[in-house]
Image (cartoon, rainbow, N blue to C red; front, top):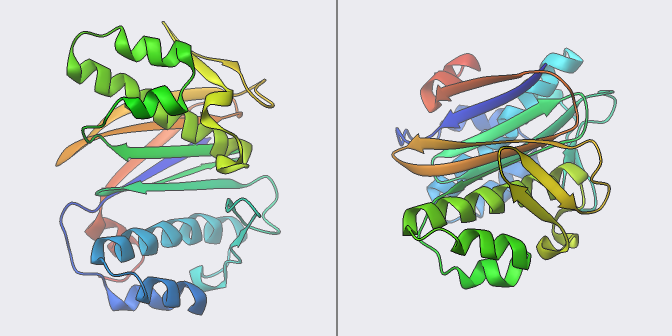
Length: 229
């Protein structure tokens, strides 16, 4: 069973100092140097989500979870076996995807954007697909659908932006098809619209068969689950 956990930070609660005891000293230093409070909160909640899921897997306290990162920045948990995690955050959402095979998640706040970005980073076919919509709102949704799908894919593969975004392409018809790309066989995709004060788009890339269990909670509910508030 794959799990997508969403924490909605739109309540704008103050960052609980008690939560910092669960993360490493290095992470606390990085959070301390962040200027914006919302960036600190997203960074803290993201790590706590990983620690919570991995702690259950390893049956250890949150602060004892050994989080490591590959040279491309993807988090992994040594000694956890067939346990894969990926994290993404934007605006008021922090998303964690957990599965038994490589997995990637990306969530983006839907802001107005110059579509020249798509001309630069997408394939010609993807750019033409976006422009096929006369309605500005539908163009924006098409852009963020493709953008989050691409991000989720390179995160699942585990090589991040070392894979150029225009080196592979998606076709969006009745289903989602990855037409070309490195090691593309066996990947599946899910994409959905989210509302949390503003509009968001989220996509998942995964290789595991089965159903998704989606959990969405408020910031306060998340902290309560950790025994903090």
